[in-house]
Amino acid sequence: MTVWLQASPWLILAAISVTAFIESFALIGVIVPGVVVLFSLSALAQSNDISLWLVLIAAGMGACAGDLSSFFIGHRLQHRMDHFRWVQRHREWLREGEWFFRRWGWLSVLIGRFVGPLRPVVPLIAGTLNMPPRQFVLLSLGSVLAWAPAYMLPGFITGEVVELVQHRSLAERSLIVLVLLATVGLLAFMVLYHHFHPQHPRVLQRWPWLNQLSPRLPFPAVMLALTAGSALLWLVLARPLVWDGLLNLQVPTWRSGIADNFFIGFTLLGDPQILAITGLMFALWFFLQGFYWLPAQLLITITLAQWGIFQLKAFFDVPRPNWVAILPPGDSFPSGHASGFALYLALMSAIANESRPMEKRWQFYLPAGVMMLIMAFSRVWLGVHWLSDVLAGLALALFCAALGRLAYAQVSTRRFHLPGTAAFWWLIVLTFTAYLVLVFPSASQNYALG
Image (cartoon, rainbow, N blue to C red):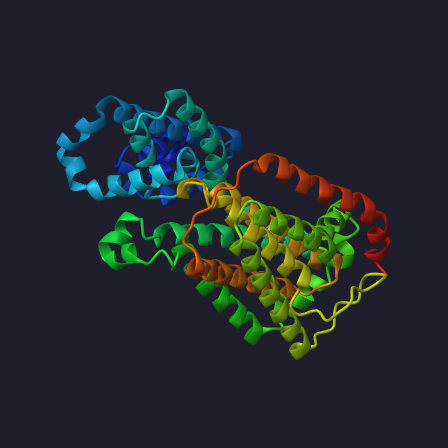
């Protein structure tokens, strides 16, 4: 088979296109090991000196054709699909795909392209549920532009990866690994949340009692408390991490680049002063809106987190890395900046999402998660914290935020809607901006390498 394909580069490209089409085609793609075949074909293409662009175009064309075919089949047949024996045999796939589509909306087209069991199902469901064809085509093209490199590049450059990595500095390699680990961590949490949510069809079948959870035990808060609490316990027991010293040695190399001012500015967003000022603004606003329990919940949650930070710092007494001109006060473990900023974003995004539909809450939670990770990394980048410090700070903040949400559910099941939010959020943004303008010059000197 390999010899036959090697006889003509065009046969390899045709095989790539056909495989991508089958893997994306309605329901059939679920049982086809397309990832393995595409990996092998892309490696074969590289060994035959076929241009990477031709490989990506062939894969993209096949994937687009599969998506569009599935979509228009679903759009044309709609509810008549139940008459087909193949569909009746695999109704569970369609049920899960429909739940996923209703939960995530248009984002499901982008996410589904990277999830094997959903890839050939979501386009079919989108057509069945009358998603606008123009919107689907644009989303499909956008997802394929990211999917083709993600699935074809590993095979194409397998033989060159080791050499490529060996020629990069340790500082660059450590940055690459951190970005990948952070991305995988966020995606893993989203996948866990998706597959273990009580509204998931398979969860309802296996554990129907989850659907009967009391409103005073909100599932997201319970899941977050268990996950963050376990992570915090592991970090307390496992520190210091091997990566603490490894990353700290890269600080001078990192800080010689153009991103230094960005991380200095970003780390200022976690200063206790600005968080306290804007936090008081939020508490006052909530009180004036008639949500009297909310400021109390925020105060108790923040107090709990600060108490936890103080106790852990005093117990472990970990010295800070000594890179900057003026070291921030206090011990190193855990990071107060990472913890305070993460707790701030977790509480604010939860409050902002309270009146939003469940399937749209990711629009706040995902950016909040990214900003938490950037804040945490800024402390490592600047050389004022070890990696274990910021990870423990994140875990402690999320654990306290989850406990705060559970505590509020015990005293009130009232779901609140905050009117006139746009003007107030702009006021918060302007307050942060003004603080950055005032503090950045002196912070640049304090955080300069000593």
